[in-house]
Length: 51
Image (cartoon, rainbow, N blue to C red; front, side, top):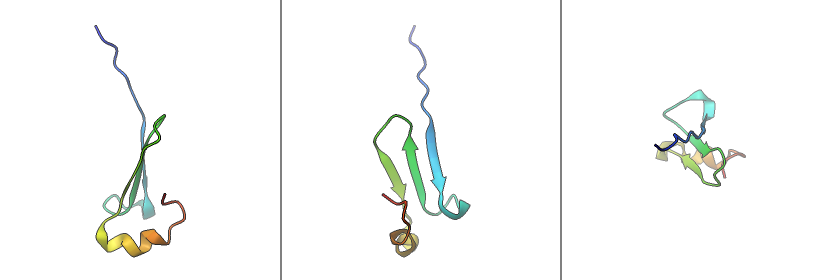
């Protein structure tokens, strides 16, 4: 029987809007995913915490 592995996914919502800019990170991993809708691209370029 195999053990269940649990990881924590952190999703940061810019301006608390789930359908706008989102930064996603899994604890213990180096990969960061940034979701930027095309209409929010100009705003994303001005944010300091966008990798």
